[in-house]
Length: 371
Ligand code: GLA
Image (cartoon, rainbow, N blue to C red; front, side, top):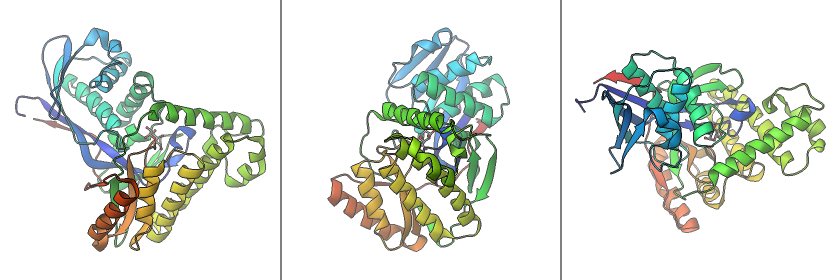
């Protein structure tokens, strides 16, 4: 790749706990992965961004003056949206050639889209010589996802993709963007990431619908509670006032309030080395995503059930937006291989789908290297 000027990477992410609460002002616990989107970039002296991929035959040219006209592209829309938001924020965009090496599996719930958005903006900034705080890149990347890709997402994915740190999980307060980095110490246990490999569709509309439901719940509860976001409602308050909400809004809000509480307990568990308790909280999180937030589905549920029934597994749950994608499980380190074999068989016989396991470490978010 010597012919390029910079090699820029941004990460996929996992989320230990804190699902569907980032857009409610909650605290979440993601970490950046060594599964990354890598961008090789060089200025080309034209008014176009030429995109190509290591894994796709497609070639796409984006006119820098018409970046708002590429929403319908199958590949290249995230890049166009990110460049457009960056441009609208007043940054100079130079014509360039971009080669994308996407190692975050698409549609896996590991935030491949955030990794593409964040790495694209970081690459555009690198060739102009701008030094930008990763959080500012994350915010523009989130705007691209919301305004260009049409997913009314929170900040978790883009923040983790940009600002992650090797071997640390992040305790990100999505209300203030204050972030504490905690060492991921699980004793004799490891995290296992498993893809249920069920293709999901309509996820965008269902995601936006859930978010709207939490906003309705907030509006009603604000009639009696002085809160600015749903994450500020504590369980005792919710118990007192939940009768004001009708179903399914009540279940949605119950998920948010209880998940925020689980994150609070998970921080204590992680800090005190209580991995068993962390596993218990993961299991409760999945049950709430399934029963209250209703964003799981029969395949993710079957995968989580298979994992939870393995004796050396302390906890397992679905990650990300839901309706498919990856689970995270806490498994005894010296039993990881037998866990994989067990889960693979059990899930296959329950659903007919083949589970896929990813080996990844916790890594830094954005990296920029001169080639
Ligand atoms: C998607 C969104 C995030 C977050 C998760 C659910 O990954 O992009 O902002 O809402 O779903 O926790």
